[in-house]
Image 1 (cartoon, rainbow, N blue to C red):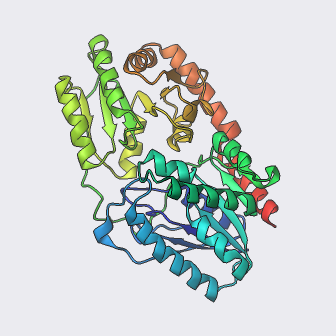
Image 2 (cartoon, rainbow, N blue to C red):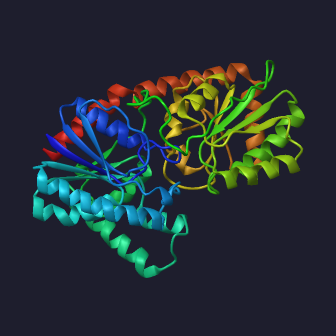
Amino acid sequence: MKTLVVAPQPFYSARGTPLSVYYRSLVMAEQGAEIDLLTYGSGKNVRIPGVRVIRVPRLKFLEPLPIGPSWSKLLLDVFMLVWTVGLLLRHRYKLVHAHEEAVFWCWLLRPVFRFRLIYDMHSSLPQQLENFRFTTSRLLIGVFSTLERICVKRANAVITICPSLTNYALQLGAKPDRVLLIENSLIDDIQLQDPAPTDAADPIHEPVDFGPGHPVILYAGTFEAYQGVDMLVEAFASVVRRRPDARLLLVGGTGKQVTKIRELVDSLALGGTCALTGHVPRANAIEYARSAQVLVSLRLHGNNTPLKVYELLASGRPMVATRVWAHTQVLDDSVCFLADPNAEAMAGSLLEALGDEAESARRVANALARFERDYARPVYEAKIRRLFEIVA
């Protein structure tokens, strides 16, 4: 099936790695689809068998692109729209797979080019506008809400990435037999066309080594305010008083965000026990996870399950996560250590994960079993086959 994937994201870059786009395209191609993937110009070239990656012009003065809605992305989306039309004019696509806001212009183009439309719904776009404080205009948010509702109702299939989004899509009027939950749970290695660094945003990274005898607590991810990295640092200040041998490694964050957290680390006199790396290549982040004793997934609030949760389930390491709906729709106390989103509760869960080896081993075994049963590659492949059945 000739398929156009429209993904308005910085495809495999230091500031954004949309693995869901990569894995969706990879597995769809493995199932027989012939795919053209249209995406932003920034990022590295990846090798996806059966997939031709097409990029709009790269505008370096806009980089690094921020997480969430921005005027920079709006400008790039104008290019995405023009390139989408150009590709539709040159090729007879039977299927268009639109990620996030791309569904808006793809829905408008569908009557002209007569393709079937998949809406890959990673989040509620009106909620994104509010959560990232892009606008307070009720008119603009209302326009996005109306467009979202129309697209959910009229797409041939809607992919959601977590149960809360499934429920939301159904509330908007999506037909139940056309909504398919496909979690971002694949953890295959990414194949780069050029293994040498090609993105100027990639840092030159000197690995952090705390030395032997220090159990390492690792958080790797964004440092956005809704994550609560400052709360984790405050919790660690309590942990290290009970476990002076413990160490905290924080991976990720922009330069300004790292500076802000480092100031908090210094104010709590944690400089010798806590290290911050900023953004690192994915290979380094994987190595840190393999050597850590406890892995942390943070959210102070929100509904969308973080992609990293599935990697942590399969990691073979104890996981500590905040007890919010973004986590608990996938996790429970049998597979990880859940803590209320405050420093005191987080410190207690970290100490339990570090100190109770038997309980940690039991929850790790349960986590691995759940991943294999509900989220492993065969399960993902079966859902992609079901997706093709829905849009056939």
